[in-house]
Image (cartoon, rainbow, N blue to C red; front, top):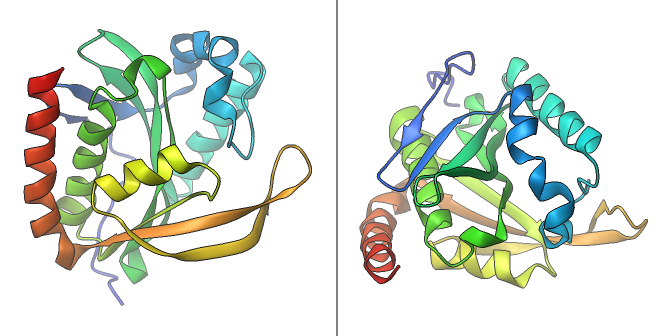
Length: 207
C-alpha cells in the first residue's frame, strides 16, 4: 500500500515549460474550446463520448470537475505557447493513492498541434509530476486499439504495451471496442526521462 502519497486535488496546479502551460479545467473554458467541436470532427473518431455540440462540451467539463471534487481525477486545459491559444485537454484519472497508481488520458489536441512536439511536452510535465511530485509507482494509458496514431505516440514516449482488453467498452455507435493497455513505471522513469528530454530537444530544434 502507498497510503502516504498525497495529491491535493483542491489545489490549482500549474504545470508549465517553455512550450506549454497546463492549468485546471473549469466550466468557463468551454468558450475557449468550443471552436474545435464541429471544426475538427477527427478529434472524436475514437472518443467514447464524442463532443458534437457545445452542450456536450459543457457536460464533458462538468464531469471532469465532479471527478476532481471526488479526488478521483484532475483535468487540465492545454495552452500552446507557440500558437498562443488553448488547444485541448488532458487528465490524470482513476487516481488510486493507496495503490500508487493512476491513468493518464482523456487527451485531445487541435489538429494544428499534431506532430509539433506539443504532446511530448504535455506528457513530460504530467509524468514528471506523477512520478516525482506525487510518487506514483505506475501510470497507465488506455486507447481504442484501432487508434494507431495515439498508440504510436504512447510507444514513442516510452510506454510498454501490456495487452488488450477485449470487447472492453461500449462506443457511441453501439458497438464495443477493444482497449489497448500501456504503462510506465516509476522505476523506469529516470531512463525514460533522459530519452524524453533528448527527444523534446530534437523536436523543438526542428519546428
